[in-house]
Image (cartoon, rainbow, N blue to C red; front, side, top):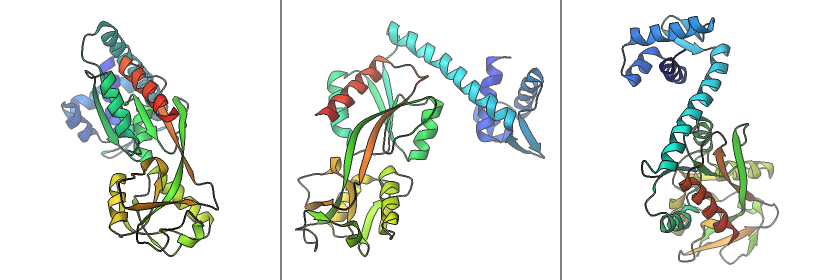
Length: 289
């Protein structure tokens, strides 16, 4: 069994399409097919169900894929650890978040402490983040809701109350608290389904007997404040996203404990670099303050 065979197998398994996999790997389809066939002969079982040109990972293939991904991740993390310890290349930090409102201050402090570290942040839905996390493709995730898994370390760093944001001239603007059912006839702006805060508020509203009506659904939470200010709709917004400079009133919800848990997540098989360790320390300090 060769390393190249395993790398090719992962690509074919993820795409379930030989032509696309060959194009992705920059090899001929016939060469890729022979490589997968030799791997299957070595294992003594077929890893794919084949119907014409269609491929589908079978039970043997699914189980083998999980093992191979873990093994190759361990090898890659070993290389990164050696490079990190030997200072052979600049440190990098790869992050994924489901909520960006808490990130600017954290990244500002991180850049102060580690100015030479390159970082890359991706804003993702919970499902997208879970996929990257399980593959070990990111150093850390900041997620709401938390994601559970056998190989996932999940640390709750903050419980963030959800508030109702209304423009200054709104009929509720002078209220300090409000009942959730009072909002059932209002128009909302929010993120799309699949983001933690949206899924949480949808489920709570349904428990109170109504579905929030949305006039805007996007994938940029930072834009919601501007839409509320412009009186396009009201919004469910985390307390941590409040901006005192905006012409918005924030109202506490009185009849339910609507709170999002923010979790710091990592794949336990991924090496914690110096940059990743520093990032974790900054996150913990930020939420303690």
